[in-house]
Each structure stands twice: as structure tokens, then as C-alpha cells.
Length: 164
Image 1 (tube, rainbow, N blue to C red):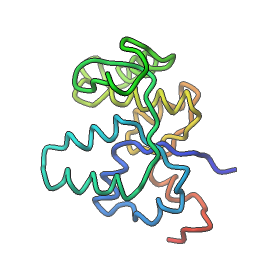
Image 2 (image 1 turned 90 degrees about the horizontal axis):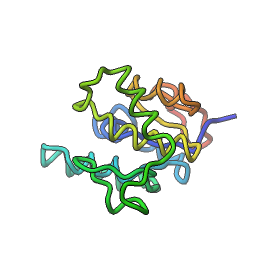
Image 3 (image 1 turned 180 degrees about the vertical axis):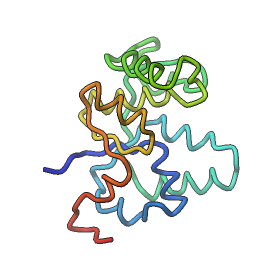
Image 4 (image 1 turned 30 degrees about the vertical axis):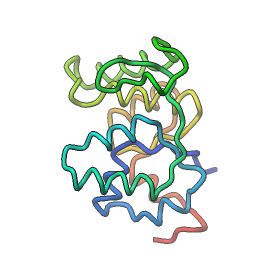
């Protein structure tokens, strides 16, 4: 049985742009690919204007269905408009964030633990398989009972529509 549906981590959109994943390999999963507003916001925050434009074009071409996040946070990943109630906390956010801090160290703010926790929380709550190149996020998602695939595992999945 194949895992899925799939939540694409932000780094997957970067890998497509960098030529590590042919976009055709993702199109065969159309309808089974998801993202949250967090991934879109992270791509919009790319400093290099040309890369940002190209990443947003990749995001649109992939056509991942956007799913709302479960928790509200303030600051860089302000999610005021993307959840039902300000201050709402989903049942996995704190667990994921704490587990990432344990793996990465308490000063892991620069490594995106808030964004990662928001993305993983949706995966855990909705039963999505996370596709990521982030080893820490992969392990934490699985440790909390979810499913995750590294890029190589995802690309090796059989699909009637994709033959590398």
C-alpha cells in the first residue's frame, strides 16, 4: 500500500526549482499533494527576488491543495488570517515544537521550528505523509505517530503516470 496523501515541505519546492525533482514526477500525484499557508509564506519570504518569483511559479505549477493550519502563532509566521481563532492551539503543535527543540537545540529559532511545527501538526492531525529533506522534521513526525518520507523514498514510489 502506498503512503499518501502527501504534504510537501517547503524544501521540496526548492528541490523542484533546483532540478532535483522533475515537476512531472509531482504532477502524477495531482490531487494527493498538499501544502499549508506556511510553505507559501516561506517561499514569499525568499530574499532573492528572482528566486522568490521562480519558487512561487513552481508552487503554482505543482498545484498543491492548500490546507489550513491548526494553531495560531504571532511573529514571523503570523497566522492570524489562517486559523479560526487567535490563540488557538492544535493538539500537536507544542509536542512537535518541543521535540524539534530537543533535536536541534533550544536556540533553533533560525532553523524554522515554528514553521516546521505548524506543517507537521497538519500532517499528524489530517493523516498526511510529510515529504521533506529535513531529517529532524522527518524523525519527529514519525516519532509522534505520523508518516514521513525523504525525497529519495518519495521519488521511488511506484506510479502509473511516472517512469523516471
